[in-house]
Length: 192
Image (tube, rainbow, N blue to C red; front, side):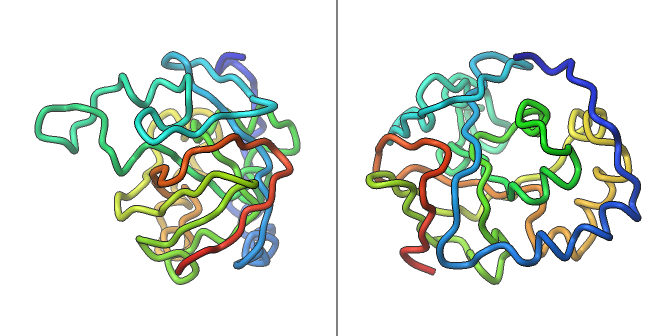
């Protein structure tokens, strides 16, 4: 799958009207709705099963080979292995098509409350029977590609104080226990 899928851009009113559903996301036990690998820039692979690894993050994803300006030597940032986003918010801005969700550029799409209050840095989530990830303090921000794919209103909205507090653009995490995960797996809060 590539990034040429057309998504109807939602208006600010549509986004605000659906926000109550995002606020109802579970805080202690949720669900992994989608796992996406980014093998190369602009490419997305929606996965039936994914491997989380301590060193490479999501196996086969290009995170481990992408330079990062937040590190002194431009190496991949260890606290940005995984991008995690709220599935309810993505559905609000992209509709029900999971391929359209993947355009957000995140790897894990969860039905879970990702707000700062619910998941401060250091919080740990178990996914499935094996894997554990830890929320990091690295901010996850929307980019020009996000605006192009989901519209200026969605991009502007994720920069509002309300959206930032809810982490609607998502959060960064790192793998602390490797394992196999798949859509439908339970996401459980282990530590807040």
